[in-house]
Image 1 (tube, one colour):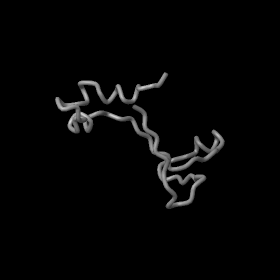
Image 2 (tube, helix red, strand yellow; image 1 turned 120 degrees about the vertical axis):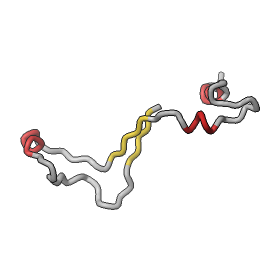
Image 3 (cartoon, one colour; image 1 turned 90 degrees about the vertical axis):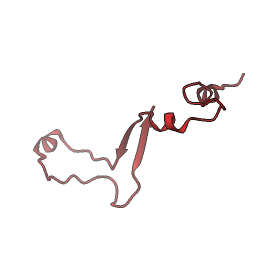
Length: 73
């Protein structure tokens, strides 16, 4: 038994035009929730509560490293 879920999704009338090609206009207007992670830091709640505008938090990444992108459909 094969799983054709991905294929079936592309064949839905909402995403395809009359010729069966993916309708780019519809595809480009689909909303996607995305988050970008710059880095992580572990700090105590005491220090978190002391943060103010302009505070600097040292993250676990070096400047210039690639960001992690996470998308949810």
